Length: 443
Image 1 (cartoon, one colour):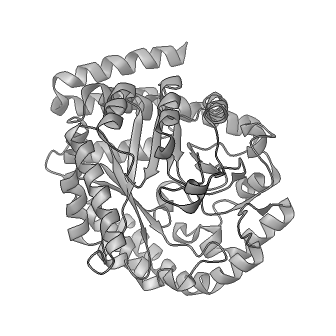
Image 2: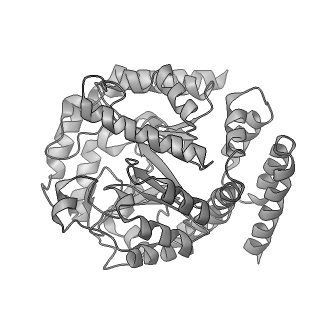
């Protein structure tokens, strides 16, 4: 009954905002304050109020960009994100957490397929995949736990565009995001996005730093930018993603790069720290401590000046209270159905084909994350892989988890050995950054 009232009120509030968005931002915030009775988003509400009541700042301009989207898409996006995923979903998640004494995530990441555009697996058959019926079952279980955000990650999700659209139709109350190279985004797919209203692409950007020297990366960048131009022309929401490494960190956190994102119309940008995961990984590509610190500083500066919402999971743990993995804020299900703590941690002792989502969250490995989080009081040292590999190694061993990499299984000992030097080198830099941040807060 309460959720029905909230849904009705949300629709009325969003319709009112259509008439005069500038005068309605504060009204929307008042409405969110009213319905966040459990104070699950008190910090976020305070931050939003601070910026949306000042039209001269970049966050206000970003909010205005949302109101330039297609009207139907915008209304669905705001209702699914603010009401379903955050207010209704957040309260339901918290109730399950308390009752079951386990983590419940805000979002589920899914590898719908292991195949990528143009890759050998896609061309010669037999790539692993989660079928639409299997994903439908996951989403149904997820909604019962309060989870309304689903993100397609590995592989190229738009290789099966009809499946993605079908899931959007079946679950119009959820928001579906997808990390894509952009090759599947054409006029026909844009029309489908306008019809279903709840699909948001995040375009993978490659080659910005050295496109002139590497023709393949330049072609990837051209494809990505063409997709972004098409999405902008259709007034559709989208973002992008980039992996920053020791080689490209400077270019992809430059003002030139951010201006490119703003001009392209991106609403958000994910910045993923390179992790030396997998036997074939190159540890030398991992950003050095001083490089990561520079990324930390730059992204915070651009958040105060550029109308695009940037997310850096490794450096932003303070905003979500620490490590997000293990179902605390997210979990990952690969194309074989293995339920993993994180999209970068390929270890599991449960498979979604054999258990329910709640049973997976109460499995030994996920409970180990629940019991050990946030791993460190310094939120810049809260990732167990990069900052506490010894604890990660022990958790995986005690849970009896196995590597889920079918092509080249990597032992947790091998992975953690690669990360120990990084953890030691980052510790002092992270502590200095953390102290500096706390000193500013105190002022």
